[in-house]
View 1 (cartoon, rainbow, N blue to C red):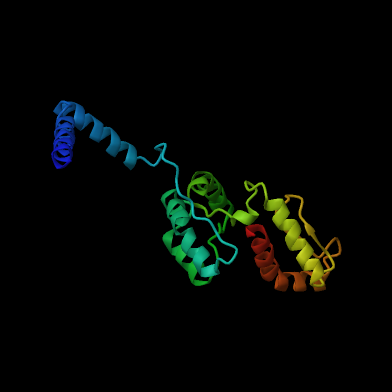
View 2 (view 1 turned 90 degrees about the horizontal axis):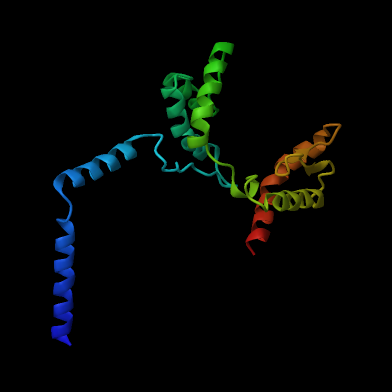
Length: 191
Protein backbone atom coordinates (compact mmCIF):
# COMPACT_ATOMS: atom_id res chain seq x y z
CA UNK A 1 0.00 0.00 0.00
CA UNK A 2 2.78 2.44 0.93
CA UNK A 3 4.73 1.61 -2.25
CA UNK A 4 1.62 2.19 -4.39
CA UNK A 5 0.89 5.52 -2.68
CA UNK A 6 4.53 6.59 -3.01
CA UNK A 7 4.61 5.65 -6.69
CA UNK A 8 1.33 7.51 -7.30
CA UNK A 9 2.68 10.66 -5.63
CA UNK A 10 5.88 10.41 -7.75
CA UNK A 11 3.82 10.21 -10.97
CA UNK A 12 1.72 13.22 -9.94
CA UNK A 13 4.83 15.24 -9.06
CA UNK A 14 6.55 14.40 -12.37
CA UNK A 15 3.40 15.26 -14.30
CA UNK A 16 3.11 18.61 -12.56
CA UNK A 17 6.78 19.40 -13.18
CA UNK A 18 6.46 18.48 -16.85
CA UNK A 19 3.35 20.65 -17.17
CA UNK A 20 5.16 23.68 -15.76
CA UNK A 21 7.76 23.77 -18.50
CA UNK A 22 5.57 22.71 -21.42
CA UNK A 23 5.06 26.09 -23.11
CA UNK A 24 7.77 28.14 -24.73
CA UNK A 25 8.93 31.26 -22.83
CA UNK A 26 7.38 33.61 -25.40
CA UNK A 27 4.03 31.82 -25.06
CA UNK A 28 4.11 32.12 -21.26
CA UNK A 29 5.04 35.82 -21.41
CA UNK A 30 2.23 36.53 -23.90
CA UNK A 31 -0.28 34.85 -21.61
CA UNK A 32 0.91 36.83 -18.61
CA UNK A 33 0.84 40.09 -20.57
CA UNK A 34 -2.69 39.37 -21.73
CA UNK A 35 -3.89 38.65 -18.22
CA UNK A 36 -2.22 41.68 -16.67
CA UNK A 37 -3.45 44.10 -19.34
CA UNK A 38 -7.02 42.81 -19.00
CA UNK A 39 -6.88 43.20 -15.23
CA UNK A 40 -5.60 46.77 -15.50
CA UNK A 41 -8.28 47.83 -17.96
CA UNK A 42 -11.47 49.22 -16.36
CA UNK A 43 -13.44 48.11 -19.41
CA UNK A 44 -12.36 44.48 -19.01
CA UNK A 45 -15.16 41.96 -19.05
CA UNK A 46 -14.84 41.36 -15.29
CA UNK A 47 -18.07 42.63 -13.67
CA UNK A 48 -17.71 45.22 -10.95
CA UNK A 49 -18.83 44.43 -7.43
CA UNK A 50 -21.22 47.24 -6.54
CA UNK A 51 -21.98 47.54 -2.86
CA UNK A 52 -25.54 46.76 -1.80
CA UNK A 53 -27.41 48.67 0.88
CA UNK A 54 -29.18 46.79 3.63
CA UNK A 55 -32.49 47.79 5.16
CA UNK A 56 -30.55 48.90 8.25
CA UNK A 57 -27.73 50.75 6.45
CA UNK A 58 -26.83 53.87 8.41
CA UNK A 59 -26.23 57.23 6.70
CA UNK A 60 -22.54 56.94 7.62
CA UNK A 61 -22.32 53.48 6.03
CA UNK A 62 -24.04 54.76 2.90
CA UNK A 63 -21.54 57.63 2.59
CA UNK A 64 -18.72 55.08 2.87
CA UNK A 65 -20.35 53.03 0.09
CA UNK A 66 -20.41 56.15 -2.10
CA UNK A 67 -16.62 56.70 -1.98
CA UNK A 68 -15.83 54.61 -5.12
CA UNK A 69 -18.69 56.31 -6.97
CA UNK A 70 -17.42 59.76 -6.02
CA UNK A 71 -13.88 58.71 -6.96
CA UNK A 72 -15.16 57.90 -10.44
CA UNK A 73 -17.11 61.16 -10.62
CA UNK A 74 -13.93 63.08 -9.69
CA UNK A 75 -11.97 61.20 -12.37
CA UNK A 76 -14.65 62.15 -14.91
CA UNK A 77 -14.38 65.83 -13.92
CA UNK A 78 -17.98 66.11 -12.72
CA UNK A 79 -17.13 67.09 -9.14
CA UNK A 80 -14.02 67.97 -7.17
CA UNK A 81 -12.66 66.15 -4.16
CA UNK A 82 -13.26 69.30 -2.09
CA UNK A 83 -16.95 69.33 -3.07
CA UNK A 84 -17.42 65.68 -2.10
CA UNK A 85 -15.59 66.28 1.20
CA UNK A 86 -17.86 69.25 2.01
CA UNK A 87 -20.97 67.22 1.22
CA UNK A 88 -19.78 64.30 3.39
CA UNK A 89 -18.93 66.62 6.27
CA UNK A 90 -22.45 68.02 6.09
CA UNK A 91 -23.83 64.47 6.13
CA UNK A 92 -25.23 64.77 2.64
CA UNK A 93 -24.56 63.78 -0.92
CA UNK A 94 -22.59 65.91 -3.39
CA UNK A 95 -24.81 67.42 -6.09
CA UNK A 96 -24.18 69.64 -9.11
CA UNK A 97 -24.49 73.35 -8.36
CA UNK A 98 -24.87 74.84 -11.86
CA UNK A 99 -26.29 73.94 -15.28
CA UNK A 100 -22.80 73.45 -16.71
CA UNK A 101 -21.87 71.16 -13.85
CA UNK A 102 -25.20 69.30 -14.29
CA UNK A 103 -24.26 68.41 -17.88
CA UNK A 104 -20.87 67.05 -16.73
CA UNK A 105 -22.54 65.30 -13.79
CA UNK A 106 -25.08 63.50 -15.99
CA UNK A 107 -22.41 62.34 -18.46
CA UNK A 108 -20.17 61.09 -15.65
CA UNK A 109 -23.09 59.47 -13.85
CA UNK A 110 -23.87 57.38 -16.95
CA UNK A 111 -20.34 55.99 -16.69
CA UNK A 112 -19.94 55.73 -12.91
CA UNK A 113 -23.37 54.70 -11.63
CA UNK A 114 -23.55 51.26 -13.29
CA UNK A 115 -20.14 50.39 -11.86
CA UNK A 116 -20.02 51.99 -8.42
CA UNK A 117 -23.33 53.42 -7.13
CA UNK A 118 -24.73 51.25 -4.32
CA UNK A 119 -27.55 48.91 -5.23
CA UNK A 120 -30.76 49.21 -3.19
CA UNK A 121 -31.50 46.69 -0.47
CA UNK A 122 -32.46 43.38 -2.09
CA UNK A 123 -35.95 43.65 -0.60
CA UNK A 124 -36.47 46.93 -2.53
CA UNK A 125 -34.61 46.03 -5.72
CA UNK A 126 -36.80 45.92 -8.84
CA UNK A 127 -34.59 43.02 -10.00
CA UNK A 128 -35.94 40.97 -7.08
CA UNK A 129 -39.13 39.20 -8.19
CA UNK A 130 -40.39 39.29 -4.59
CA UNK A 131 -39.86 43.03 -4.04
CA UNK A 132 -43.53 43.88 -4.73
CA UNK A 133 -44.61 41.29 -2.14
CA UNK A 134 -42.23 42.93 0.34
CA UNK A 135 -43.73 46.38 -0.37
CA UNK A 136 -47.27 45.00 0.03
CA UNK A 137 -46.31 43.47 3.40
CA UNK A 138 -44.84 46.79 4.55
CA UNK A 139 -48.05 48.62 3.55
CA UNK A 140 -50.17 46.07 5.46
CA UNK A 141 -48.01 46.56 8.53
CA UNK A 142 -48.22 50.36 8.27
CA UNK A 143 -52.00 50.23 7.98
CA UNK A 144 -52.20 47.95 11.01
CA UNK A 145 -50.13 50.57 12.88
CA UNK A 146 -52.59 53.37 12.14
CA UNK A 147 -51.19 54.84 8.91
CA UNK A 148 -54.38 55.65 7.00
CA UNK A 149 -53.06 56.92 3.65
CA UNK A 150 -50.37 54.55 2.41
CA UNK A 151 -49.96 52.46 -0.75
CA UNK A 152 -47.39 50.73 -2.92
CA UNK A 153 -46.11 53.27 -5.47
CA UNK A 154 -46.48 52.84 -9.22
CA UNK A 155 -42.93 51.45 -9.47
CA UNK A 156 -44.09 48.47 -7.41
CA UNK A 157 -41.31 48.66 -4.81
CA UNK A 158 -41.62 52.07 -3.13
CA UNK A 159 -44.08 53.16 -0.46
CA UNK A 160 -46.26 56.26 -1.01
CA UNK A 161 -47.35 58.03 2.17
CA UNK A 162 -50.01 60.70 2.59
CA UNK A 163 -52.34 59.91 -0.29
CA UNK A 164 -53.63 62.52 -2.74
CA UNK A 165 -54.07 65.05 0.07
CA UNK A 166 -50.53 64.58 1.49
CA UNK A 167 -52.03 63.82 4.87
CA UNK A 168 -49.38 65.02 7.38
CA UNK A 169 -50.38 62.52 10.05
CA UNK A 170 -49.99 59.56 7.65
CA UNK A 171 -46.64 60.87 6.44
CA UNK A 172 -45.29 61.47 9.95
CA UNK A 173 -46.56 58.20 11.38
CA UNK A 174 -45.49 56.27 8.27
CA UNK A 175 -41.93 57.65 8.42
CA UNK A 176 -41.79 56.68 12.07
CA UNK A 177 -43.13 53.14 11.51
CA UNK A 178 -41.46 52.19 8.19
CA UNK A 179 -38.20 50.83 9.72
CA UNK A 180 -40.07 48.48 12.06
CA UNK A 181 -42.50 47.39 9.34
CA UNK A 182 -39.61 46.70 6.96
CA UNK A 183 -37.94 44.54 9.60
CA UNK A 184 -41.18 42.62 10.14
CA UNK A 185 -41.71 42.14 6.40
CA UNK A 186 -38.09 41.01 5.91
CA UNK A 187 -38.41 38.53 8.79
CA UNK A 188 -41.58 37.15 7.20
CA UNK A 189 -39.80 36.64 3.85
CA UNK A 190 -36.89 34.80 5.51
CA UNK A 191 -39.15 32.27 7.24
